[in-house]
Image (tube, rainbow, N blue to C red; front, side, top):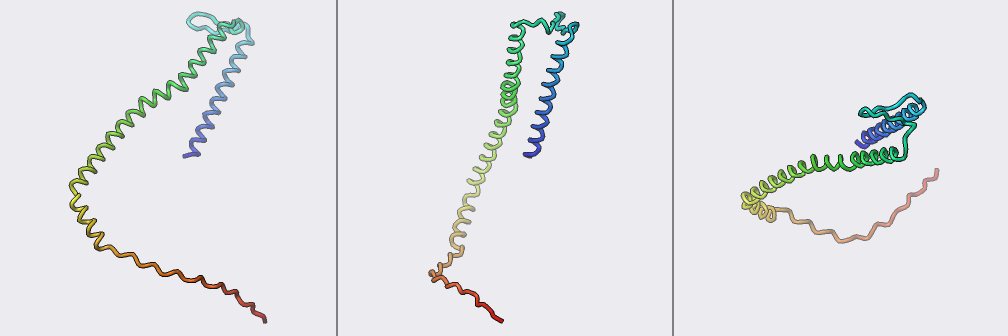
Length: 145
């Protein structure tokens, strides 16, 4: 799975680079032609005649869009998907805990009898052997022909 995430990350970065380079090339292409302009809601925007207010407004708009994409969308997904899954998981865990608790109460006499039988019938551990002195290593004899 680590390789899949790396491949997806590389493809995402390549698409990001392609989008950014396409945007810059369009920006420069439209700026080179004097007769081209962009019309938004009936108002014509000439790229060569942008003043400081337009540039600041565009930068603020891009910053707000970046905050929305990087902060707001992940938080909405976390709260919208993660929180319900957490609640469902907690309810299921409580149900399993309740079932195990009832099972422990119901079967406690059998568990107690089994514990007593296991303690009475288990094998006793063997007594450890006394420590012996380590054997001296023997060097192999050289054979001469």
